[in-house]
Length: 282
Image (cartoon, rainbow, N blue to C red; front, side, top):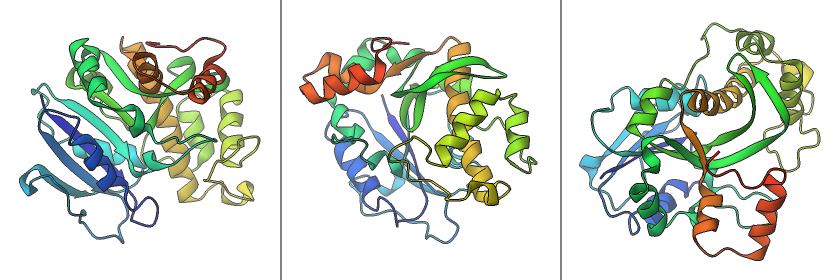
């Protein structure tokens, strides 16, 4: 079985070693062949990759448009994918390397050879979306229904059969002019709108890097529109998956359940998912 990595970056300023560290981590623990597609979303950055231990004929570099962040990049990459093959698809952004909270939050520490063996032998890839599961502070609503959990878009895996049910990732019209139109296009509830705006304005959300000090001034800006689209698409991906019969599986909780984890990590997951208990598979 092959592992196809679709890696999205926006220049080298943030997480410059993310791609090299990702490949170096996966090569020793994945027994099959690894193919890499790197999508560069920054028009001012060169189309290149660092020296990697992958033969050049298995590396492809594409120029993304960044209209909807990583989701437009992944649509570009998937558009040329042979969907008749039985491969594992890893979708990842350079932001996977960011730490969260007080623990070493690099998701790669939870991805090892046993993890791949389990998800392959237990057939998780056939009908699952595997990644880091996040929970909202409440239940939200849009045209796909109510939801409170979703898989974060910085690192997730699936098989071809699941991908066919979700693709394309970008479900939003390109002619939406401002945040209000974007929210209206998905029939977002007022509670959902407030959650997104509070998150972007850093209200009660510790450690959120993307933030505008005066959000009202930039409500019509292209960068804000793009950010809001990417957040909504992250949520829609999980909703569409669930509504299509695809399970949401938390990779980190699965790893901690299968393998040893520290008391600090166990406490973190209890706080993160209580209530309810760790939803795996959800």
